[in-house]
Length: 431
Ligand code: ATP
View 1 (cartoon, protein in one colour):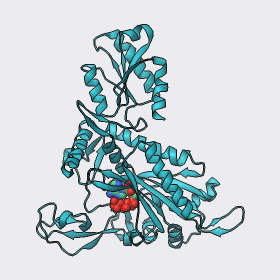
View 2 (tube, rainbow, N blue to C red):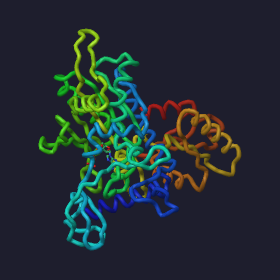
View 3 (cartoon, rainbow, N blue to C red):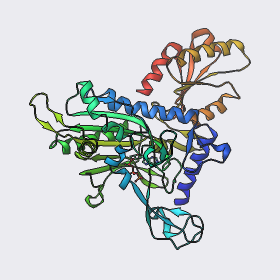
View 4 (spheres, protein in one colour):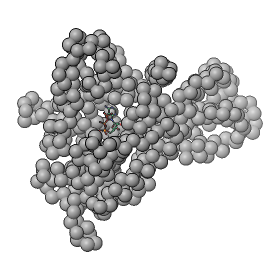
């Protein structure tokens, strides 16, 4: 079973490389551990995941606004949040080969590099990447690459309150890069040193936080269903394992080929962050109820999801090997190409011209692929492998009656439809 699962991940890694989804980062220089680049199709997939999240979280709720803060912030942000002192993982060193590891990720307490069984005492290792701002590299110019996007939201809490006429309960959402100098990046894009997060800080009145927490866990589970992700479950963190600021945390986990792992964490962070940033900055971050005049520090519910982990979950879920084909059964919402257009024959200019017309028209609205190589069977195979939900073939009948053959990726069924129906058909599949 374990071997089969590992096999599956290897096949996905190979498909992603071969078909332009994911490449090792800076590969021509030998790569860099914990960094990956997204190719044209992986970039589209990520874009579609972020778009679906933004639509669901920001567009659907008229009391949630978006924001884009900088990656490098005043380092005092991370002193107040506790990251400078406390954002660390334990690290041990193998006494034989001197490589370093996170002890809780070691399998059978053996060094994955040399098999050694003796390790140094664990010491804490801060995960934040350090840099310097300006030309002088001294302790006064130290800054950090943000380890999570949430910090940018908390420091702008007052700016948003003052400019957007928002009333508690309300939320601020952000999608952006985060960086963690992980001791052991592993499991492909699951644990990397540079990744992207989609975070929401939802500010509520203390006392209503338990209800909102439950609502957000349910909403986030429903979102995963809406993008077609199966094999997910909720995991409620036991009280004794909760972070010091959390009143409750529920993880959403996916069953990866390497086991059940977190793709999103939803935490009731109480008033910890606003109070900490208020104390650290000396600014008043109180909220005043416009109706009653009551002043309080809101509690915050934080659903925090990783784009890369969700992309990997989606790829694992969609990957299917059938008798004669490999098919990525991606939801149309997420598929890099929504459809592919083919002229039946490449050497018939009238077919090619007609097909180009259909292709260029659909491209105005959707990301659509063009393929005129080899035979139709090979083109279907090639599109199945990258998850294109429908293939549209222009043949000689099209020249007479403007109908085309539409072939469905999952059922492989073919039907004849009029060109004027194509855009509607694609849109319906996305929705
Ligand atoms: P883990 O325990 O797996 O290290 P975490 O609990 O530290 O994760 P959070 O701080 O809750 O993660 O971050 C929220 C989300 O950000 C995670 O659910 C995950 O999707 C994503 N994330 C965190 N660390 C990484 C990483 N190193 N690589 C890719 N995504 C990550």
